[in-house]
Image 1 (cartoon, rainbow, N blue to C red):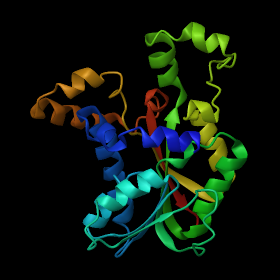
Image 2: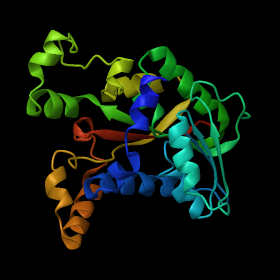
Image 3: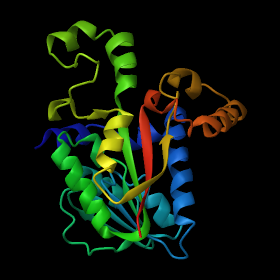
Length: 261
């Protein structure tokens, strides 16, 4: 069993996104998914690394045609358990690095909302992005989610009291970039890393979004908000999530890209 299988077999990913502070990421991502697919009369959607189907299943239940690809069998089983058989969704096991079973230029929207969390080499990231570009129609959209470096430095290294541990394990570069390996599960990036990857492909960036902004820093407070206060928080978040001066401080980001026609 791989480290990734072990991690997701013991983790309730749905619970993370269903908490009130987790809803910030979910609601933001869905907002921008809907903006992208609004440009197509009958959008065809591919989610690579669909996890337990938080997004794919929700979109299928809205009536959109979805293909969900997931590497981890446990996640795929959970995803399928949410379906009653009436949804226009196909769920298959597969790898973001090899989408050869899918034809070129097949989808209006391709989503990689998890794979870049777990790819540790530039070569693998380029391969995953190349496959996403290949299967997306010219003029179509690619949405890519990332885990960001600075929140981990602030929250885990300093607030969590792990400074000595990460120093002894040589997990930080001189300029405080986390060194990620498969045993750490998550790959952490900065905005310049994302832009460098994009420069390898015929893509135009539409936007780079802070999907959860300050939500993880204030998770306990946000989880205790009453509905009216939480609605105001989301109003504030949507007003600021596109501000590029705040992007790197968000735990998660969403890169919105368009394939050049």
